[in-house]
Length: 150
Image 1: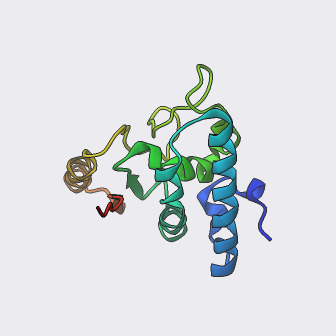
Image 2: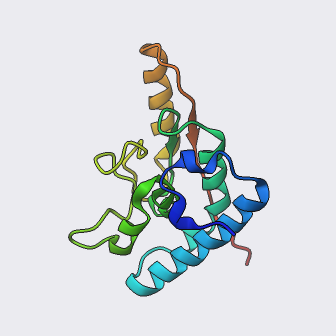
């Protein structure tokens, strides 16, 4: 079984098998449920983005390659995988980390986003900047929506 405490950066994911990644996803879900149950926060968005976040950090070379989150509170898993696992216990507290990606908080936080609707335009801006400056990185824009059927 994986030990979440051994994951300090996305580079720690690179050698894991698919089975180990599945075990890690379950451990991350349990950790986020534990933290949010204790201190509050956005639970559903983060739980729905576990596998996506693992896949993005496993496949791409972050922070060189950049992720633009559409909804900031879907990024709890991202924070856990980018060295802020223990800091998550103080998320949204005066002396804690932000509940959303924050550029000043981590080089892995490409874009400071709160709620939905800004990722596509931000992604286009990042892509245009990359091309104008002749930089070489990949850009992923996340757009996760829940489906409600009534």
